[in-house]
Image (tube, rainbow, N blue to C red; front, side, top):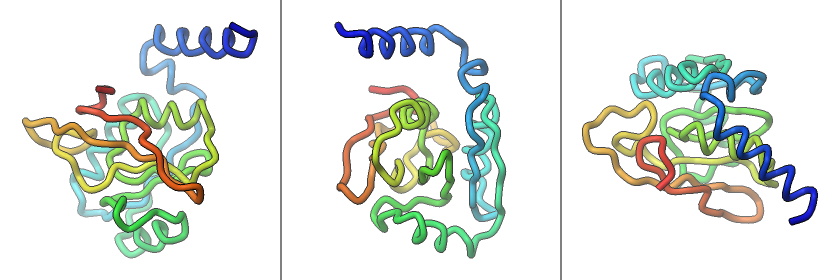
Length: 154
């Protein structure tokens, strides 16, 4: 194991050991653009805030589609709200662990997305928690960024 791998492993171990609120301290703000009448969007914003993330909200249904287009969100990955964090698009009900991974690894990509509105994903109500895919997307194509149930990696 070289020095870089050791530092990365040590940092990852420290992140796993700390509680969620401490992990979110110092995180960049997440700017969410959504329809003001969407309950699941409000649920996702509340999920982020409960974890200690700073969140700003733009309640403008007309602005959501324009933002998706400007950020290059593919139509088949579109969901009900769009966010920006550290220059990345975060489309739909993306779980916090996937966002933290995005911020830690800083891949060359436009962002991450959860297509549609999977039952039991963060912010989505439902007794049944579907397994769903988080997709990393960009000019270089797409990559699975993890499969989740609720906000747990499976």
